[in-house]
Image (cartoon, rainbow, N blue to C red; front, top):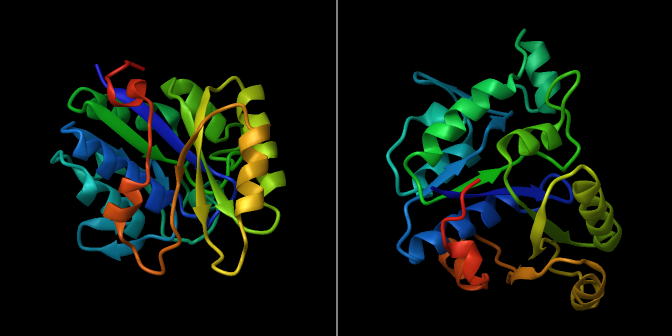
Length: 230
């Protein structure tokens, strides 16, 4: 059986993809078979093979399993807007069952599946459901990426509270500096006191993507690297 982790963030553009890639690399470093998934992506490029998302492509390439693109990214939309709006523009509806089917195909092959969300926690995916419904359907624990900038304490606490109140399991958070001019240590210290889950990584600020360095900053408990099921 495989372990799975859903990566969400305090907002959009706060480094979820880099953190997802870092976690994939971390688990690969443990000798595990790792699959990455970005179930829903907007802002995709039109290619001969179909719509492709740059983040989803990286996630697939970093995985050490050879699987079809649409297993990793079942829904890819061209408009660079919220996914439910992008789907509506092209006359589609995001169906959780399609995503769950691809997810189960990955879990059948992998020791670990790392799943990147889209936007923040409460992004709608259709007229009645949001990311929380996807996570509940997958029955996977959540890791919160906190983008370290002004306002991050409030965003982190609200996100963490909502994740738990939605009935999902928050298992840890990652501190990701996105503003080189922001003195983040005070915010980190505050969140260490107020968040009820462990800090899994205090990442360095890197002006370019260096995933191996980010992976080296991750410190997980033993249960994170043993197949748990779910």
